[in-house]
Length: 288
Image (cartoon, rainbow, N blue to C red; front, side):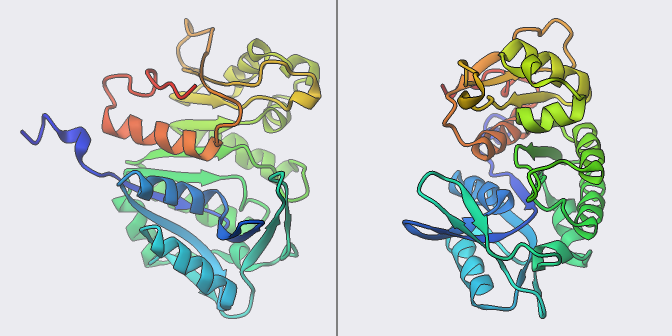
């Protein structure tokens, strides 16, 4: 009976990254890919934990409280005695300003400890992103965590750019490493263009974006390709899914509308890979 219903068992997702408090018109909410990924998994009934660093301040306590209320384990969240919690002011249109944006801030000073090691070894899925890669310290510790989590499905959110809006050389090198380390990844045209040095015109249609993604994602089992901005002249702004390692899979399928949240799609797809790795669960996804 247990084998027949193995898909019902909750899995363990651990998300590592840059934690922040989002100030929105509707109120405060957990901010950052790591927080959103953990909340998504917990809401779906899975065990979820988050790894990051906040300040020993009111904003940090508020963030930890919101995560715990959502069912997220915060045991591996570090509290910095000197640096403040990151706070982002999110506008009604979804754009955001980071109030604490000077180096270093608390999220940039992540340090390896036993709680990180323990979380990595217990994880079925590890979600990581580009948000915390402005700091060499954070990049190093996240790499170590992913090395420790070798048995987990490693899911990379490569949508968000660096705070400067640019992919400088250290971040670009780390992005390439992330594409090799990940079992599943979600990527946007800006990062994709930086990785493959493709002209913008070559990424204006799904076929062009997919061909470019193939060149830098040979080790990824499934790639969720983010649409380009419609303002850039792209008329087809849906999400696409295909297998970069399958040479015959040259026509990625649409699985969701453009307004779907990339982190939610990534979490759902990564958990599907763990729950049913032999039945092409990810390939059967559709959220359109």
